[in-house]
Length: 253
Length: 165
Image (cartoon, rainbow over all chains, first blue to last red; front, top):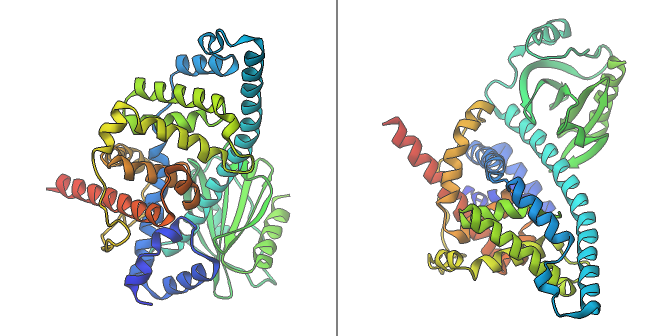
């Protein structure tokens, strides 16, 4: 397929709407096409910005309170003259809609919030590796990389020993996730790159919980340990992601 | 209240007016309560609520005025053109400064494009959910979304070029 054909699929890819086989083919094309990669990254970034900018309006506290009262109790004029049987049914319907909808919306909101954080981390991983300078401190020595973050982050962390493993430390940089400052460490294994994000485990990132998941063909593992949130993400095998995560768990204890 | 914040945000984007948005949300919840019997269990509750809000808006005075701005008839057949977009990841501070420009660009879209963009990127609905909410085929959702994003990119690009002159 030509770039012209692939270009029409960028939005569907960014929205996670391509079928599995098509998505794989699209990713393969991105590896060999700088123009489509650039365009895709731009649109992923734009979607993220529209998501943030689109949450623009909040209801006033007066209106919120008024609506809460109205939903809890139907307006008198609506039930006037309907008799107690109609009134009873209306109130039951109101209770049912609230109960069902609250259950559905809590689940949906939790899932959406979690997906939002995972999506942000996946975007960060992709856009960082695609940038000209994926790391600000370039070193395979953890005793060089770790001190570089001093004064840049409101927390400290330990990096694992890599002796006897296939992993190599490439470097690190400071980034923001959910508006929290975070350390982004880049590791390599064979020809794959892994990103490890470390930040304080505050609201937003907390929603990740303990997670091992796959998003857009990336493997992601996240956990909380000692007040810090660790997230490992890569396009390599899930076993590699888990192995590096285990090394960080041991280093953090 | 279920979906209250999302519905209010969407209503305000559609009406561009606080009082009208409040009336719209109030009317939506009233209709949802009355019509709960028509809700099919197992179908998408969120799409159902957004559909009520949207249909209520479209029959309001400002909704009728918004509908007067027509969308192209050959939506599916329009050729896409590669346009330059935001190339580099922006810093957090820069994003905040640019958010208003982006919001103005979204507000300037015809309502048929604006609603699809907001449902996809803010509410993160699937194409299927958007199709159910808006009442159009998935192909139309895709073409409207594509055109909305293209229009936003072009607006931002034009403002950027205007600012650099």
